[in-house]
Length: 456
Image (cartoon, rainbow, N blue to C red):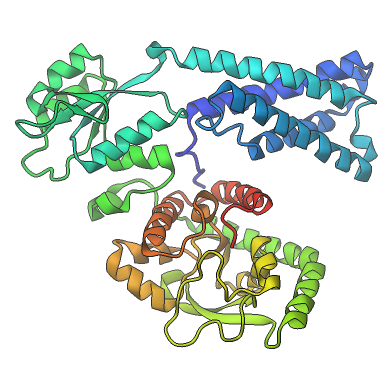
């Protein structure tokens, strides 16, 4: 079974792994200071549980988004939020399971240790990894729009240790600088630039490679140990999405991924059935209250039925709690928008909390949908979008989902431009589909619901 790992950097894994050890060590030290060391050692599950709880709270506080918490101030704020959330969560957990506590005052000491240890470790890590000798020196062949997009992504992120040394133009003449970086020469100068600038990786970003691709120079660089890849591939790794506009069918055909084994499909379907049944039982009271609220506010059906396009283009009926007026749509279908005046007062609440989506558990049980996948769109919009967006119908290669990679990574949208951006994420999900990836998306979905981001 393939494991999702392409969008996880070594820097991110290093930070996560070290802080797992750091949190566990802080718990053991705090237990020793409070005379509960033997209890901690005999109940290692408690240490593991508290460590996992802290890591989850740190994750929800964006502490593992290295670009967002690169500055010390943001780091300290994130640590305060994360440890505070962990303290509240542990207090609530200890009420339900008193045996989880290692001793009076132990966790307060853990919080104090983390507030000192984590910022110090992160500052040391940032200082160490900013050493130019530990960064990959990257050269971009091409100066067009795609090349500039990749350069912008490299400059704006901290997860991957890339340092852009400059550009190579595929024309005889061109600008001297692109995106604040030097144009170091033409394709005939690749050998010289690779040697003089100690290049570790070459990114090929040529709009038209026919007759312009410097094959011999790139081959010499490859044989000398320099990594060579195209711009679409590195953009995918940096952003967690696929740049559809510059995508060639051959890239889709010959690239890794886009293969889901029978075992993975069976495991995913089993996971969907088990989760749908559990969530259905646990959410039954909330669904009953939602149904009553919808009925009390306005006349009409409680459930809203709508045709959507599913796997392999098959049309199915999707169920939701009605959140709009009965006369919300007449004639040509229209997208919902921000502050849509067709949405009822109850509708705004259930949309924000995603309670309106709960009837789709029936779609999951029937096999029309999965828990995780691209959100299903209406046939009318699918026809329009497929005509204007390349590879749009490729998102129907898998079952649509209650939530998805696009939903947790991108805000709510209601335009062709938004649909294009979501397709970039959807194709990335389809390419790297796995149960591990699904679990990370479900964890992120909880974060989106709690924060209210993207929910409408």
